[in-house]
Length: 261
Image (tube, rainbow, N blue to C red; front, side, top):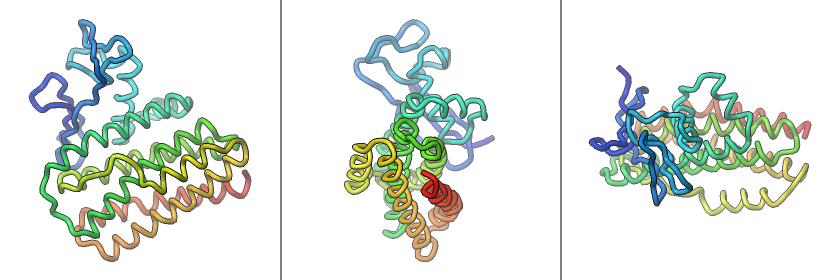
């Protein structure tokens, strides 16, 4: 049997299980207030909850719930190729799924913050930096899918969303049980770069986005190399080592795109 991931209160009606490898992870349910449900647990109205209410609820009964379901399967690499194509084909669907995936990670932060810290400063700092980097890549990747004018940029966006969602799940599975408090937002510098890039259009946007991504990925590779050399926790250094080839592949694609966009 794989690992049990609980979504929602352990003893409540919102309890969810997703079986993957790793340690048990508790993630609070995503909700919006006010919440309204019909008799099968499907949210109704603008303030509806964005997830399943009970095991009996139909998982595809409303679009918002579907995005949360997509985000869970996306983050843990459990989607079929057809499901991935369905999301990546629509910038709007990709953006909403990305937001839901980040929301799941932020919900998990509250659980992790209650745990006693057990890692070195180097290990903890790396996990925080990786988390903020993954949030940045998911958000900016979704933006590129919608705003890019160069085909390579539009194609790269969904790749970054999918890969960094999986890297985020991998890092969170180590950070949360060890009590690392993950920030709710990217760094101020990352946020400012994304805002500045989003103000551009056409080819100016494409080039700004690609140069931004080149810088982000170089920073991520350097942070991973430092963690591999100086980290104390085998779990954390494994996160860095497993992420390195993915990040390098992204950097190669970014530089290829810079040559043609």
